[in-house]
Length: 155
Image (cartoon, rainbow, N blue to C red; front, side, top):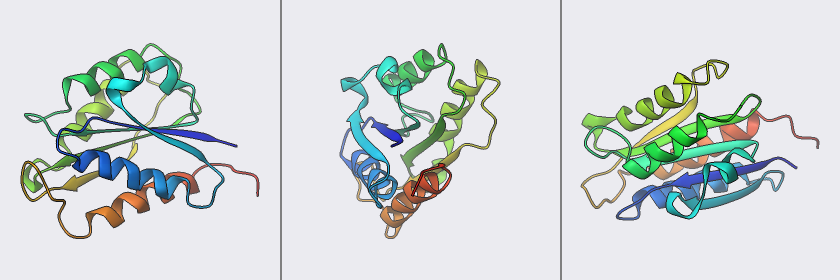
């Protein structure tokens, strides 16, 4: 059975909620063992051991948080061929995709065999502490399902 890890950093709970919803989409049919973990509770070694790696961050001054950047820098040391990698961010509409795009560029920088585009999502929030804009949680679950659909899973 393929395994997935959804790693997040979250200050006010919005990014954590999105991570949990992506995990629900990944594991919806019970054929992908999925865990959700805070970035401060995991290591790059643990993350790289999964078939699917999803990493999310709130947009912090135009990019991912320092803890998420550090995790992705550490992941660059590993051969990630054959892994499904996706990124997501939570942000204001004006910052859509900034953190996600920087994470993609960071990982690709020393892993040329990982070819874009990565699956991913930018989820908009109404204010710094949330809530998420209407309809955004459904997009998160859809992302999990899209990632699951790219896996070769025996019936």
